[in-house]
Image (cartoon, rainbow, N blue to C red; front, side, top):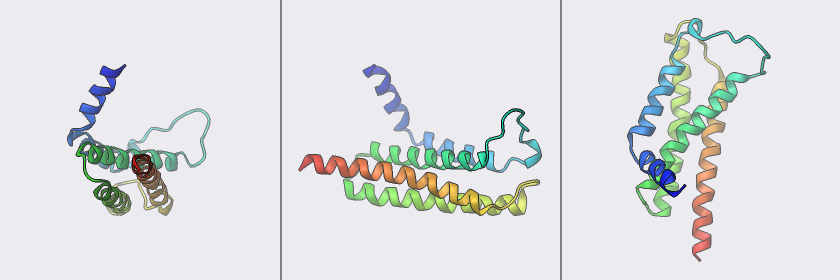
Length: 139
């Protein structure tokens, strides 16, 4: 079990992981609406909001993990987490504007920006309190 987690940590240390995920989000959110599949089966209300929440939570989480692997001081990590949160919110908003003006069959939705923000905030809180817990236990 230890070896597998070590491999995962070594994988997540690479800057290519969060950069790749950032590009994947760009591609997914810039797909024309007509290319998105219509799913048969039970309809989940506001499913797209859950997707946005997960995408931007993972976006923030992967960038935060990358920061942790840099072994910065807790103060620098706090600032980094905040910057990543703000970058996620801005990235989500910019992608909504891009969808509105440049992507066929897609629209601007404040609900998507709210879901992006909520996902980024969840990741921010999880990492912030993890560092806070580590600092408290050291005292």
